[in-house]
Length: 105
Image (tube, rainbow, N blue to C red):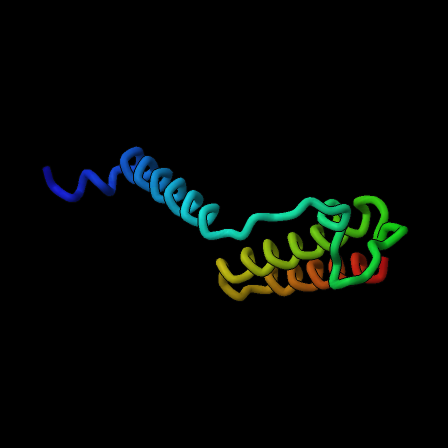
């Protein structure tokens, strides 16, 4: 039996699961016993109380940022995969205008 069989995905996955199980059991054995308290069930954020209102309610701010990066990255990918022609300049100007419209709102 060669060692290459150990690199087969199903065999490697089973070996990984065994190692994780062993490490989890060793960690549980080394850990100190915990005591139940009301503080363990509360939110902890550097000793501060949790916020009472949402920082950015809704998905609109996320979609604006996601669209900004999608336009930027895909636009630059398209520009980088072509050659420099007058059409690429027009495309670049359109890309900059779309980004400016997203930034300004």
